[in-house]
Image (tube, rainbow, N blue to C red; front, side):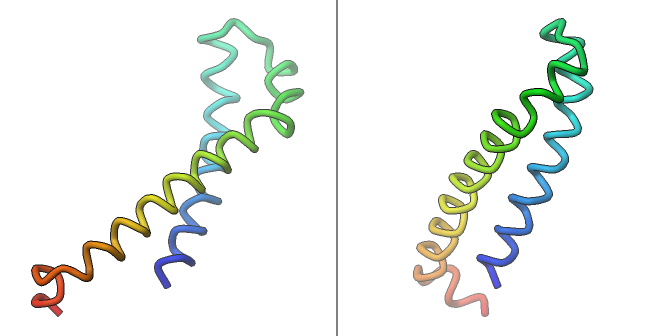
Length: 76
């Protein structure tokens, strides 16, 4: 269940961040929207998927490690 939730989080984060790049990049980097759309599939989406995967693995790994401690086992 934790892995499914982390996977869903990665997908939602990637979609939201792709949309935010369409708003922020033209303003901050002075890029045209056409240029941002051109790098969307080759750079922005893969970067966000990789970043989300790294965060998900770290989060799930930390959660599983903490659940083995006596503090978390006593609360179930």
